[in-house]
Every structure is written in structure tokens, then in C-alpha cells.
Image (cartoon, rainbow, N blue to C red):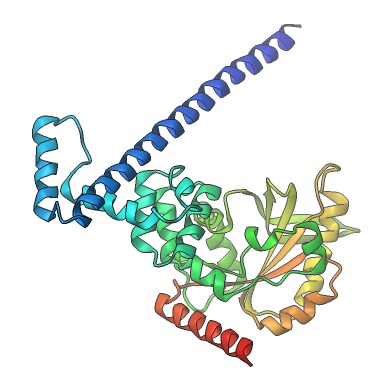
Length: 337
């Protein structure tokens, strides 16, 4: 009886803690929105003054000094930051779609996005990703450094028909390629080296995958008949409510690799998956792949599998942009014919 009372009391205490945390998050969000509104309106005020030739750089610096002298408790209003607020306003003033989004992000993340992106589409991409994944400053900077936006435009994830039915938004959750420069692996490495490095840097790898991934184990053992088999890496995805098996290949993708992965997925669904969970999904993570071969291999596959590529170095942004431009030019030429 005492045990039941203790359990109930712990549950009550946990509910109180949850209430406090939810209120803190709500309060922070409200304060943050007010702060971003302030910066936006200050930027608007300065922009109008400058546009009407009433203020110049010197006046903005005088304003910063005035604030510092008369209200030293007000921090963050240097002349440099005031000019950033002007730029912030001018970036989003005519964008009805993005204006509401910026109010949900911290000023630091907003600064990173509007100062490091070149188009409304790119800004929208990183705003939505940051909200979805709740990126910290460091995490957001890494995604921009790894050219996530350019990579997502250049590469379209190829999924099997089964995956398309199970996860209609698969291309928003999974990637066609992953950048693993943080592993520090040499060009020559085997699958064991790759697996051990990923496990050693699991926090960074999960960031690359997406925060809904929960790591379960490496070399996860499944027993079929009298034989043991080992899945390289096994995860659970909270949103999809399913197991996700990663099979690692340090060479180029070959169609026969799918047979091994399909076998593992069948074993997981029969012996490991819980009744209320969705069918398991498999990802072949390869050093290289030919998209045509991948498409042929997956087109008639009855298994929820995908093939992704990994890179050990951050992609060259200029090279990616030139590839995308060439692709767009090709599309436009085709449309004209």
C-alpha cells in the first residue's frame, strides 16, 4: 500500500514540475516575441529616418551613446546592433510568410539566418528547420556551414513505394546525404571504423539525423532460428513511432545490399517491434551511390527502405550553388522547348 502511495506522490510531483516547465517555456516565448517585435519596430524607425535622409551613420551612433549614457541598464543597443535591427526590418518587411516565423526564434538565431542567407527561400528553409528541430546557435551554424539548404535542393531522396505510403513526408524527415566531418575519419576506413566513430560522436550524429531520433544500440542482435545477426545501428523515431535500422557500407551502393537490410527489418517487425508501433524503416548509409541504380533497386521493393550517402567533408558552397544553377538552367531550357 505504501508503495502505491509513494508512486502516486512521485507522479503528482512530476506533474508539478511539468507545469512549472511549461509555464517557463510559455513565459520565455512571450518575452522573446515582445523583444523581437521591439527590434523590428526599432529597425523600422531607423530605416524610415535614414530613407528620408534625416539620419546618417553618425546619428545612429549618437543614439547608441545616448542610450548608454541615459539608460546604462539597457544593454544590446550599440550602433552596430541598431544597424542590424534596421537590416532585420528591411529583410522581412515585405515578407508576410516569414514575418510571423521570426518572432518564434531568438534574436541570435535570427541574426545568423538573415545575415548568412541570400534569398527568401533559403531564409524560409532555415527558419522552419530551426523551429522544427529547435536548433541552438551552434547547431544552426553547423547546418548552414554544411550547406543543408543547397544539398536539399540538389539531391532528392529516393524512397521505396512502401516508405512513400507509410511516411508521406519522408523527404522532410530523412536526407539524401549526411555530412559527417565531425568524425575525423581518414579517407581509407572500414565499416567498423565508421560505426565506432558514429557511436563515439552520437550526439553530433543525432543532430545531423534530426532530434526525433533516439539511439538504441550498436550491433543490435536479432536471432533468427539458431543464428545471430547484428544490425549496425538501431534507432527509434519518436514522431514516426517506429524502429529505424542503419546498415553501413563504406563502398558504393549495390542492389544486393537491400536484401540484407530487408532481412533485418523483417526480424525487427516480427520479434522486436511492439504492437502499437509502426513497421520498421531501414536506411543504407553508403559512401557513394548512383541515383539511377538506387531508383531501379527501390522501385519494386516491398520493404520500407532508403539509401543515403555520407560525406566526410563539408561540401563546397560555391560548387553546390553552381550545380544548382546549372540544374535550374537545364529545367528552364527544357520548359522553353
